[in-house]
Length: 226
Image 1 (tube, rainbow, N blue to C red):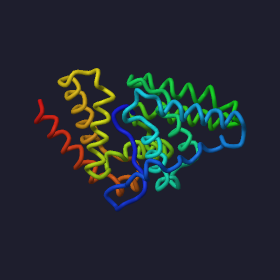
Image 2 (cartoon, rainbow, N blue to C red; image 1 turned 90 degrees about the vertical axis):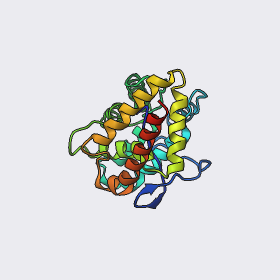
Image 3 (cartoon, rainbow, N blue to C red; image 1 turned 90 degrees about the horizontal axis):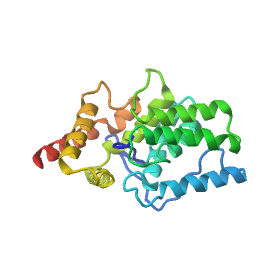
């Protein structure tokens, strides 16, 4: 999603810490064994490193992949979830919905040439599209794991959360302060008032309490700056 995403390496039951930013990314599952797979990996890394990005960078990708791991056993197809993490913001222009659709189309166009099975390609594309809204049916384990990993940044330590919020603001620097505050406040309020912020019990144990503290703190700061 364009305003919320993930974090990595367990610190305690209230938060999950990112590994060091310089640590190598784990390769996309199934792509290391062929020239086409290696070329696709290079393409994805180049996309995540585009200079206009501020939050949706390789650091975000690394964080989501790390956050998937403590939840991976809950997924029906953990490698599809990992591939979807690689693709979920591969196209990023700050256009909600459009970015996710184009990222899903990229997965559908590129993965078959790398030997991915048709069913897995469909699942990856479906999961990427799901990150536009983080809405999915009960029992959709793959979607729950990916969406929880994407949202895990909300439950990070306060200083990490504040850096995330600043980076999101930089990505929306073309939007004036007042409409940004209104839109951002609406997103945070919607997340706080939903039935569950995290879809898995493990995600709730790891991130829910601190996420709610962080979002309430940001909402107060947005209100004070208006």
